[in-house]
Image (cartoon, rainbow, N blue to C red; front, top):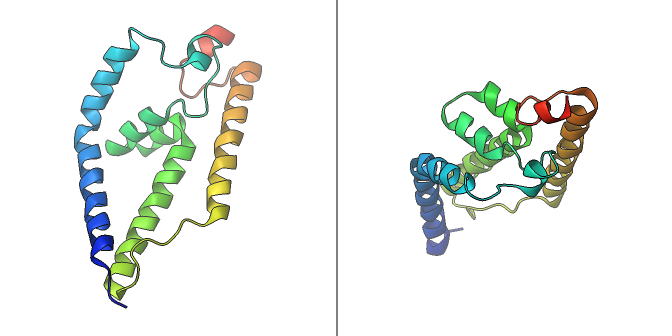
Length: 146
């Protein structure tokens, strides 16, 4: 089975987008810091003093880009797990390319559900540990609660 030209274009586009993301990420951090110093970042974080499900995600990505995986896990382990899943999916896409199959295998629904459950579960556990026990690996909100 021959690989369709559109699949190759999408695959090349994926590489361009990933490369631009890595190159432009430091600028995003600087711009986001400037913008969010003026307006509230997150209502849950700033007003209710709890973490939202995605709090720490940007810091986790930044830490992974600097190869500080221990910090990335501390900031948001679900983001690290999703990055690992994406890396496996990427390698499988290359294998599929060399075998002449369709490049993009669909993401299994159970995997999507598992990631969603992990994200919600992490959000609940993180806030219970923060409010109930003063455990705050990120360190942003422990001063408010304890």
